[in-house]
Image (cartoon, rainbow, N blue to C red; front, side, top):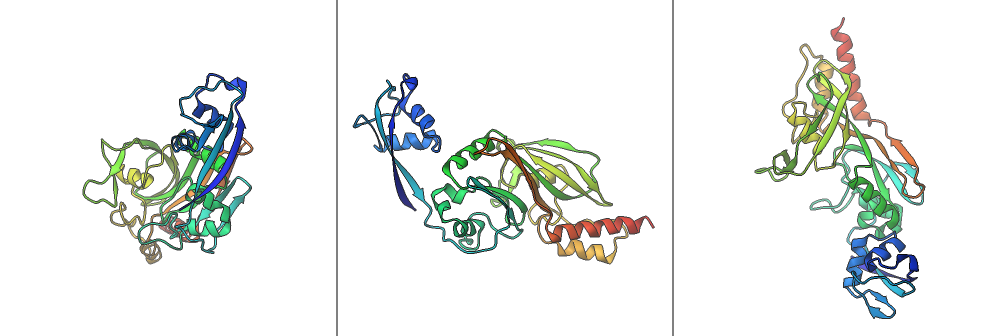
Length: 321
């Protein structure tokens, strides 16, 4: 990690008189968070009329402020030219349709071949944005949409929108069991007490809310449309398993595979061959951080998921004969 320095020279306007310095600078430099500005003030990177300043100093109006913006650049993650399915691209953001099997962020045992590596190769300027602009993530074996901020302004706006539950994320999940109707799961999620790689519903966990409704029923399965209100690790997988409808193929929470009575060899083979969670981030809606207009993006199901749905549909047809 290296630091890139950018200096801003600002005349504090009279209309901000009476405001704290950190509040005034956050308003005048909207591309930076107030927390980041406070850190720069504490580190002596902000001077007012040539003197070191404090975050709580009150603005009078007319002062000359110099802000030495210290921006970390991501150098520990290598750019790597890999295929990316770009659904939308403009100066402020990218919308990516992530393939199943692709890790989003580098981590222990996954330093290469991640989406973050690929993004840095696609746009070298993303090294100036935290995590190469990725403001949320989906699991390795989940497919679908992710939004990437290309500027600090967009990054700040999208993070704020996520925190305020203003980003709408809809998934398609193929579940074991036949649902009788949609519902909301409002159960806190925390780290599993004994299996540290898993999450679980637990009373001392963080608030987690998942809404689901029926998209299509099969003989022993249900395709559900799921909307996230919060974004906890493994949230959809944990919540659906908790209410008795685990996601097909989920290695952590899926349980045993279930076949409808009299299932054809073709359906048995299709279910046995599907070795990841059948979960796809299909739809993403938010307010564009640059234009202020609402935008919606969708991504089609990957071939393995749509093929499994076809096999289930054929099973229904054959059972009616």
